[in-house]
Image (cartoon, rainbow, N blue to C red; front, side):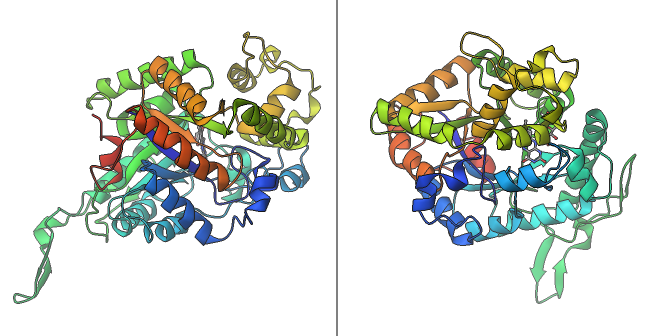
Length: 435
Ligand SMILES: Cc1cc2nc3c(=O)[nH]c(=O)nc-3n(C[C@H](O)[C@H](O)[C@H](O)COP(=O)(O)O)c2cc1C
């Protein structure tokens, strides 16, 4: 059985830089800043029994490409991006089962603030909150908080302590601490609420939290990041990982590695689910779907692709000729990024081709065809890799989300590959439904 999550951004573009100007998006009267849009998407995805809605979040307008803000602003390279967290409450108000996830970096705030925010969200959503714990992508974001971007390993060391402090705070109230004994005049039992007295390498916090224990005892934890430290972090804490792996062999290797690390960390096998990013492109016929793919991909401007790629890499690509093969450069991060972009025959792509692809889907594979074709492709990927599910990213909004829910979900259900109904109520219940 697959798990399905809907990828969202509180902004005009997701993985597709063409989304905001796609004719179907325009025809739908798309207004990405209207909260009712997200309530509609939440209802659609809950009716389709998705595990969760998931917001990415970036806190910068990138000037990495050419040193100017122009390319990012002209092309809406995941810019603007409003804060997704207030939207979780909006979406929770019109739904009762679907998980509600958002990204929140641990690199800029104090853990007390995060622990309080996420425990409150877990209460408001009645146990459906999920926090994607990230450590920040680039210097543009760090600069907005008056900081320098720290090396990856150090960011993760800090993230470990951050989560440990949050966990202590979430556990600072026993489950039965609130007694509400009106006759005796006792609201909470003082023996069941403790200070945490944390004094570590990066943080100090006295505790206790001033939020009572939440339904999931803190939110479900998500992670996105594939460095060795990132994987270790996922193995220790995460209930699910969002991964971008267009190539089946690397997806399988990642799946096996995370599952091995989860067991080594002393957790139950399959306690952490891998959700692989996919961009579905559906048509009533295969020809129509291929046509839709061509129209969509042609709408992505090269400058936008170069700008978003530069931002993600934290590296100004404007000095490199467009026929550069990044794998031939000495910078490790350029080589790593290029390994995502190989042709079907295994050939490396040029910078121009990589930038165009990055603007189309940020490396998510495009699954194209009729509902049956797309279901076939999902099944083939799932069966080769071993599990666990997919993070779906639309090419137009909200049409592509509605189409997947209307056409592909029933097909997967008919094949016995997706739940007919929820069996639990919390985000963790959904992720563990088939364990
Ligand atoms: C699939 C994926 C999605 C990510 N989404 C976000 C995001 O929405 N916001 C963010 O600040 N960082 C995001 N990141 C970056 C992570 O924050 C992570 O800190 C960074 O990639 C470094 O981790 P790594 O070296 O382990 O890959 C994402 C990373 C991946 C792989």
